[in-house]
Every structure is written in structure tokens, then in C-alpha cells.
Length: 310
Image 1: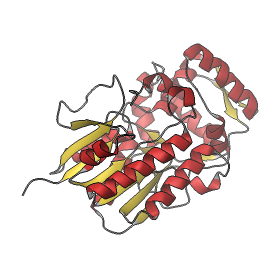
Image 2 (image 1 turned 90 degrees about the vertical axis):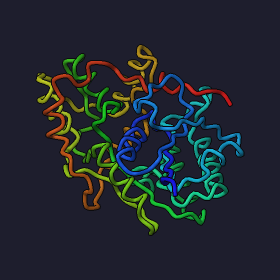
Image 3 (image 1 turned 30 degrees about the vertical axis):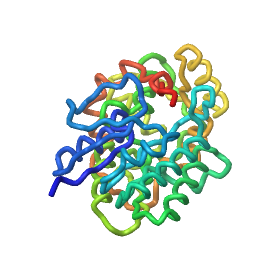
Image 4 (image 1 turned 30 degrees about the horizontal axis):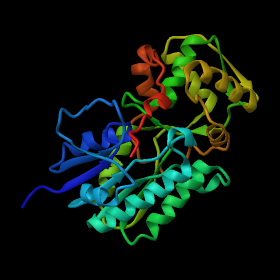
């Protein structure tokens, strides 16, 4: 009898990469479905690579056939219809993926959602996540839904890398409002380990995936400044002014530095959870170890999201 097959969407990305890395330590075969162009292969050919075309159902089913577990990290950060990704498109693509998984006989799906998705009405990013959760819950498939907070570690942590990049280049850093809202970072490898554990489980589950430390946002920034060996003035700014500065900086960088939904989510405390933490790796220890070299290069998320046209 052959080894079981596990499939990860986006194993050349961020969270999917670490799920695949940890799966390779298990006695399983690992396959990834990806439509990203130009990403490096961090697995030295150990992960089988299939294209991800949501418009070709037969191919999608074939790429999932025989899989015991599908870890779905697929989503889009932006509404960018001109660049072929938007939140409502992501919902429809995920519906097709679930349909293909059913036809292929996939036994369990571990779906990546977001912390507190129901607490952000009328924001398309969160509305899309809620709809995807509903689709999975009514699909008849065995599932686990993971709701991580903000990720760190693992070399591709776009959000905090780019905060560090700005801290290196500007003598003043603005926090939206007074910065007293909570943020509860969780290490990407903790998330990967929880995902794999849920892949082995049988019961349907919704799991908040959080780290062991919760900070006020302004203290979170101060931890970074100290670990990076900098002296910076941290000032409260109106959220609209912070967003406009991000827009202007984004013109220069050709990226969306921060979105309105992300600012609202921060200020409403959606980056933390009241559930008991499941992660063990401490952000304070991690940033103290990596701060000296962290954020030296801007991570352009939008430029990296180039996809093949089906």
C-alpha cells in the first residue's frame, strides 16, 4: 500500500510553504496546486507541482484525485479585477475547488480563514471568508477551519517585514489612532503544525490559531524598534492620514502598502482572539533574534502576484 497523498494550495507562497515543509517530515507524499509565476522551489523537487486552473474542472479533479487531505491556503488580499483577482472571484474559485475535492474523493479539507471574520460586516475581504466557511460547512466534506491572527516568521512575512522596512527608513512611525488595540501574532510554523494536526483529526472543527503573547499595537511596534536597534518617534495619527500616506508610498513602490480593511481590522481588535492560544513560539523572542537584519528589503506583495491567464 502506497503512502498517503496530501495536497497544499500555494506551497510556494507563505503559510502553504511551511505546511509543505512540515508535511515532508511526515510519511506522506506532498503535492501543490499553484498558479504563481516566477516563484522559487524551496523543496528541491520533493513536492509534486500541478497547475491551478479554476476554470478547468476536469484538470482540477485530476490534480486532487487520491488525496486524503487538502490544505487550502488560497485567497487574495486585494480587490484588483484588472489584475485578475478579487474577493468575490476568490469565493467562486474556492467553491469550484470544494466541488472538485468532492468529485475527487478528498477525505478532509483544512481551510485557512481569518480571525474574527464575522465581526467585520460590509468588508468584502471578511465577507468572502465568511462565505467560504459557509460553503465548506454545507459541503458534506470533513473539515477544519483555521482562523489565524497575524503571522510572523518564515522569511515571507509581508506585513511585519514591511513595517520593519518603514521603521528603517523613516524617523517617525504613525500608529492608527492611539494604538491601544490588541494584536496577537502567531508564528507561521505554529500555524503549520496546527494545520497538520487538524488534517489528521476526524471531527469538524473551527480553530482560532493564535500566539502566546498579546500586545497593544503601539507596544508591538516598540518591540520591533528596540530589537532593530533603532530610535524612532511613535506618534498617533488619524487613520485616514495613515491610509493616505500608505497610498502615496504605494505609488512609489507600485504596491498597496495598507488597505482600509486592514486598518479597520487592526483598530477593532480583530488581530487578537479571546480563545486560548495554541501557538508556543514567542514574537518577543523571535524579533529579538532577527531584528538586527529584519526589514532590509521591501516585500512587494502585489508585484509577486502575477498569475497565468487560464
